Length: 282
Ligand SMILES: [Zn+2]
Image (cartoon, rainbow, N blue to C red):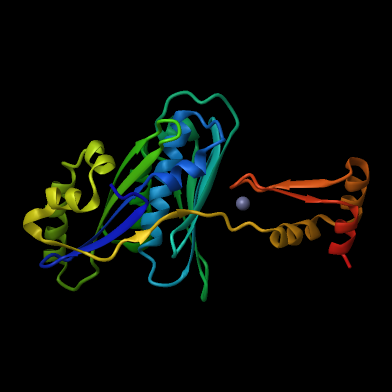
Protein backbone atom coordinates (compact mmCIF):
# COMPACT_ATOMS: atom_id res chain seq x y z
CA UNK A 1 0.00 0.00 0.00
CA UNK A 2 1.04 3.59 -0.58
CA UNK A 3 2.41 5.38 2.46
CA UNK A 4 3.67 8.85 3.31
CA UNK A 5 0.55 10.52 2.00
CA UNK A 6 -1.84 13.08 3.41
CA UNK A 7 -5.45 13.04 2.21
CA UNK A 8 -7.96 15.83 2.70
CA UNK A 9 -11.66 15.16 2.18
CA UNK A 10 -15.08 16.69 2.53
CA UNK A 11 -18.59 15.25 2.48
CA UNK A 12 -21.24 15.89 -0.11
CA UNK A 13 -24.01 16.78 2.38
CA UNK A 14 -22.20 17.29 5.66
CA UNK A 15 -20.54 20.46 7.01
CA UNK A 16 -17.42 18.69 8.22
CA UNK A 17 -13.96 18.29 6.78
CA UNK A 18 -11.48 15.54 7.34
CA UNK A 19 -7.88 14.53 6.85
CA UNK A 20 -6.07 11.21 6.97
CA UNK A 21 -2.29 10.90 7.03
CA UNK A 22 -0.25 7.70 6.97
CA UNK A 23 3.55 7.81 7.22
CA UNK A 24 6.20 5.11 7.19
CA UNK A 25 9.52 5.95 5.46
CA UNK A 26 9.39 9.61 6.46
CA UNK A 27 8.87 8.63 10.11
CA UNK A 28 11.50 5.86 10.04
CA UNK A 29 14.08 8.30 8.65
CA UNK A 30 13.27 10.78 11.41
CA UNK A 31 13.98 8.31 14.22
CA UNK A 32 16.69 6.07 12.75
CA UNK A 33 20.07 6.08 14.48
CA UNK A 34 18.62 7.86 17.52
CA UNK A 35 18.09 4.97 19.95
CA UNK A 36 14.88 6.53 21.21
CA UNK A 37 13.00 4.30 23.66
CA UNK A 38 9.75 2.96 22.15
CA UNK A 39 7.42 5.31 24.11
CA UNK A 40 9.45 8.28 22.82
CA UNK A 41 9.24 7.03 19.25
CA UNK A 42 5.48 6.61 19.69
CA UNK A 43 5.22 10.17 20.99
CA UNK A 44 7.27 11.50 18.06
CA UNK A 45 5.05 9.54 15.65
CA UNK A 46 1.97 11.17 17.16
CA UNK A 47 3.58 14.60 17.02
CA UNK A 48 4.55 13.94 13.42
CA UNK A 49 0.97 13.22 12.35
CA UNK A 50 -0.29 16.13 14.48
CA UNK A 51 2.02 18.51 12.62
CA UNK A 52 1.13 17.08 9.24
CA UNK A 53 -2.63 17.35 9.94
CA UNK A 54 -2.23 20.89 11.29
CA UNK A 55 -0.14 21.96 8.32
CA UNK A 56 -2.94 20.81 6.03
CA UNK A 57 -5.40 23.13 7.82
CA UNK A 58 -3.35 26.23 6.87
CA UNK A 59 -4.90 28.50 4.31
CA UNK A 60 -1.51 30.03 3.47
CA UNK A 61 2.11 29.02 2.90
CA UNK A 62 4.17 28.70 6.03
CA UNK A 63 5.72 26.61 8.77
CA UNK A 64 4.33 24.93 11.85
CA UNK A 65 6.33 23.94 14.88
CA UNK A 66 4.64 21.65 17.38
CA UNK A 67 6.62 21.33 20.56
CA UNK A 68 5.96 19.75 23.94
CA UNK A 69 8.11 20.57 26.94
CA UNK A 70 8.05 19.17 30.44
CA UNK A 71 9.93 18.35 33.62
CA UNK A 72 9.53 14.57 33.19
CA UNK A 73 11.89 12.00 31.60
CA UNK A 74 11.30 13.58 28.18
CA UNK A 75 12.48 17.18 28.32
CA UNK A 76 11.05 18.13 24.97
CA UNK A 77 9.90 16.76 21.65
CA UNK A 78 9.31 18.87 18.58
CA UNK A 79 8.33 18.55 14.95
CA UNK A 80 8.73 21.21 12.28
CA UNK A 81 6.66 21.03 9.14
CA UNK A 82 5.72 23.25 6.21
CA UNK A 83 2.88 23.55 3.71
CA UNK A 84 4.75 21.21 1.34
CA UNK A 85 4.74 18.53 4.05
CA UNK A 86 8.51 18.62 4.59
CA UNK A 87 8.92 17.39 8.14
CA UNK A 88 11.71 17.03 10.69
CA UNK A 89 11.70 16.33 14.41
CA UNK A 90 13.69 15.57 17.51
CA UNK A 91 13.25 14.55 21.16
CA UNK A 92 15.51 15.16 24.16
CA UNK A 93 15.50 13.10 27.32
CA UNK A 94 16.63 14.02 30.81
CA UNK A 95 15.84 10.84 32.73
CA UNK A 96 14.93 7.18 32.48
CA UNK A 97 11.76 6.72 30.45
CA UNK A 98 9.13 4.74 32.36
CA UNK A 99 5.50 4.36 31.42
CA UNK A 100 4.17 5.59 28.15
CA UNK A 101 1.28 7.95 28.68
CA UNK A 102 1.87 11.60 27.95
CA UNK A 103 1.99 12.76 31.58
CA UNK A 104 4.36 9.96 32.64
CA UNK A 105 6.71 10.92 29.81
CA UNK A 106 6.51 14.69 30.03
CA UNK A 107 5.63 15.43 33.65
CA UNK A 108 4.38 18.96 34.16
CA UNK A 109 4.60 20.98 31.00
CA UNK A 110 2.89 22.43 27.97
CA UNK A 111 2.46 22.16 24.24
CA UNK A 112 3.42 25.13 22.12
CA UNK A 113 2.15 25.39 18.56
CA UNK A 114 3.82 28.10 16.49
CA UNK A 115 2.50 28.98 13.05
CA UNK A 116 4.78 31.14 10.93
CA UNK A 117 3.31 32.26 7.60
CA UNK A 118 5.71 33.08 4.77
CA UNK A 119 3.88 36.43 4.65
CA UNK A 120 2.15 37.78 7.71
CA UNK A 121 2.28 37.55 11.45
CA UNK A 122 3.37 34.63 13.56
CA UNK A 123 0.73 32.96 15.73
CA UNK A 124 1.46 30.98 18.88
CA UNK A 125 -0.92 28.84 20.92
CA UNK A 126 0.00 27.31 24.28
CA UNK A 127 -1.88 24.44 25.93
CA UNK A 128 -0.95 22.99 29.34
CA UNK A 129 -0.33 19.23 29.39
CA UNK A 130 -3.35 18.14 31.44
CA UNK A 131 -4.39 14.95 29.65
CA UNK A 132 -2.74 11.56 29.36
CA UNK A 133 -2.91 11.50 25.56
CA UNK A 134 -1.60 13.87 22.92
CA UNK A 135 -4.89 13.67 20.99
CA UNK A 136 -6.74 15.32 23.89
CA UNK A 137 -4.10 18.06 24.11
CA UNK A 138 -4.36 18.84 20.42
CA UNK A 139 -8.18 18.82 20.59
CA UNK A 140 -7.91 21.32 23.45
CA UNK A 141 -5.68 23.49 21.27
CA UNK A 142 -8.34 23.60 18.54
CA UNK A 143 -11.10 24.51 21.00
CA UNK A 144 -8.90 27.29 22.35
CA UNK A 145 -7.56 28.68 19.08
CA UNK A 146 -10.37 28.13 16.57
CA UNK A 147 -13.48 27.41 18.67
CA UNK A 148 -14.29 24.61 16.25
CA UNK A 149 -15.13 21.08 17.33
CA UNK A 150 -12.23 18.89 16.30
CA UNK A 151 -11.38 15.26 16.96
CA UNK A 152 -8.25 13.23 16.26
CA UNK A 153 -7.41 9.52 16.25
CA UNK A 154 -3.82 8.30 16.16
CA UNK A 155 -2.11 4.96 15.65
CA UNK A 156 1.58 4.10 15.75
CA UNK A 157 3.80 1.07 15.22
CA UNK A 158 7.37 1.53 16.46
CA UNK A 159 8.89 -1.72 15.16
CA UNK A 160 12.59 -0.93 14.64
CA UNK A 161 13.30 0.09 11.04
CA UNK A 162 9.62 -0.12 10.05
CA UNK A 163 8.15 2.67 12.13
CA UNK A 164 4.73 3.86 11.03
CA UNK A 165 2.21 6.40 12.24
CA UNK A 166 -1.26 7.43 11.13
CA UNK A 167 -3.72 10.13 12.09
CA UNK A 168 -7.37 10.82 11.35
CA UNK A 169 -8.82 14.32 11.78
CA UNK A 170 -12.37 15.67 11.75
CA UNK A 171 -13.38 19.29 12.12
CA UNK A 172 -16.71 21.04 11.93
CA UNK A 173 -16.83 23.64 9.15
CA UNK A 174 -17.37 27.25 10.22
CA UNK A 175 -20.82 27.65 8.64
CA UNK A 176 -23.90 29.67 9.63
CA UNK A 177 -26.20 26.72 10.26
CA UNK A 178 -24.51 25.76 13.48
CA UNK A 179 -27.15 23.20 14.53
CA UNK A 180 -26.79 21.22 11.33
CA UNK A 181 -22.99 21.27 11.31
CA UNK A 182 -22.87 20.18 14.96
CA UNK A 183 -25.22 17.29 14.21
CA UNK A 184 -23.17 16.35 11.13
CA UNK A 185 -20.03 16.36 13.23
CA UNK A 186 -21.53 14.18 15.95
CA UNK A 187 -22.68 11.67 13.34
CA UNK A 188 -19.19 11.40 11.78
CA UNK A 189 -17.52 11.39 15.18
CA UNK A 190 -19.52 8.31 16.19
CA UNK A 191 -18.52 6.54 12.97
CA UNK A 192 -14.86 7.55 13.38
CA UNK A 193 -14.76 6.25 16.96
CA UNK A 194 -15.04 2.73 15.50
CA UNK A 195 -11.72 3.01 13.65
CA UNK A 196 -9.00 0.65 14.90
CA UNK A 197 -5.22 1.14 14.97
CA UNK A 198 -4.92 -1.86 12.68
CA UNK A 199 -7.16 -0.19 10.07
CA UNK A 200 -5.38 3.16 10.30
CA UNK A 201 -1.96 1.56 9.87
CA UNK A 202 -2.63 -1.31 7.50
CA UNK A 203 -5.38 -0.27 5.11
CA UNK A 204 -5.00 2.26 2.32
CA UNK A 205 -6.76 5.58 2.77
CA UNK A 206 -9.62 4.86 0.34
CA UNK A 207 -10.47 1.63 2.12
CA UNK A 208 -10.34 3.22 5.59
CA UNK A 209 -12.61 6.08 4.55
CA UNK A 210 -15.03 3.85 2.66
CA UNK A 211 -15.32 1.52 5.66
CA UNK A 212 -15.99 4.41 8.02
CA UNK A 213 -18.16 6.71 5.96
CA UNK A 214 -19.50 4.77 2.95
CA UNK A 215 -23.05 6.12 3.36
CA UNK A 216 -21.85 9.71 3.63
CA UNK A 217 -19.91 9.77 0.39
CA UNK A 218 -16.51 11.26 1.31
CA UNK A 219 -14.89 13.24 -1.53
CA UNK A 220 -11.13 12.92 -1.51
CA UNK A 221 -8.78 15.55 -2.90
CA UNK A 222 -5.47 14.56 -4.52
CA UNK A 223 -3.16 13.34 -1.76
CA UNK A 224 -0.04 15.26 -0.82
CA UNK A 225 3.28 13.40 -0.32
CA UNK A 226 4.81 13.72 3.16
CA UNK A 227 8.62 13.75 3.45
CA UNK A 228 11.34 13.79 6.04
CA UNK A 229 13.45 16.75 5.03
CA UNK A 230 15.78 18.87 7.09
CA UNK A 231 16.15 22.52 6.26
CA UNK A 232 19.61 22.92 7.79
CA UNK A 233 22.53 24.15 5.66
CA UNK A 234 26.15 25.23 5.99
CA UNK A 235 25.03 28.83 5.41
CA UNK A 236 22.46 28.76 8.23
CA UNK A 237 25.05 27.16 10.51
CA UNK A 238 27.45 29.99 9.71
CA UNK A 239 24.76 32.54 10.56
CA UNK A 240 24.32 30.85 13.93
CA UNK A 241 28.09 30.89 14.54
CA UNK A 242 28.20 34.66 14.04
CA UNK A 243 26.01 35.02 17.14
CA UNK A 244 28.56 33.16 19.27
CA UNK A 245 31.24 35.78 18.53
CA UNK A 246 34.62 35.82 16.85
CA UNK A 247 36.92 35.63 19.89
CA UNK A 248 35.23 32.65 21.46
CA UNK A 249 35.14 30.76 18.15
CA UNK A 250 38.80 31.46 17.36
CA UNK A 251 39.89 30.30 20.82
CA UNK A 252 37.82 27.15 20.35
CA UNK A 253 39.12 26.37 16.84
CA UNK A 254 42.74 27.00 17.87
CA UNK A 255 42.38 24.60 20.77
CA UNK A 256 40.50 21.83 18.94
CA UNK A 257 41.67 22.22 15.32
CA UNK A 258 38.11 22.54 14.08
CA UNK A 259 34.59 23.40 15.18
CA UNK A 260 31.93 20.79 14.56
CA UNK A 261 28.27 21.79 14.66
CA UNK A 262 25.76 18.93 14.46
CA UNK A 263 22.20 19.48 13.29
CA UNK A 264 19.82 18.27 16.04
CA UNK A 265 17.28 17.16 13.47
CA UNK A 266 19.26 15.17 10.87
CA UNK A 267 22.63 14.65 12.62
CA UNK A 268 24.58 16.25 9.73
CA UNK A 269 27.97 17.56 10.92
CA UNK A 270 29.14 20.95 9.69
CA UNK A 271 32.92 21.35 10.18
CA UNK A 272 34.88 24.62 10.18
CA UNK A 273 38.67 25.10 10.37
CA UNK A 274 40.42 28.26 11.52
CA UNK A 275 40.53 29.84 8.05
CA UNK A 276 36.86 29.18 7.52
CA UNK A 277 35.98 30.70 10.90
CA UNK A 278 38.03 33.80 10.05
CA UNK A 279 36.31 34.01 6.65
CA UNK A 280 32.87 34.10 8.31
CA UNK A 281 33.79 37.38 9.98
CA UNK A 282 35.39 39.01 6.93
ZN1 LIG B 1 19.62 19.07 9.54
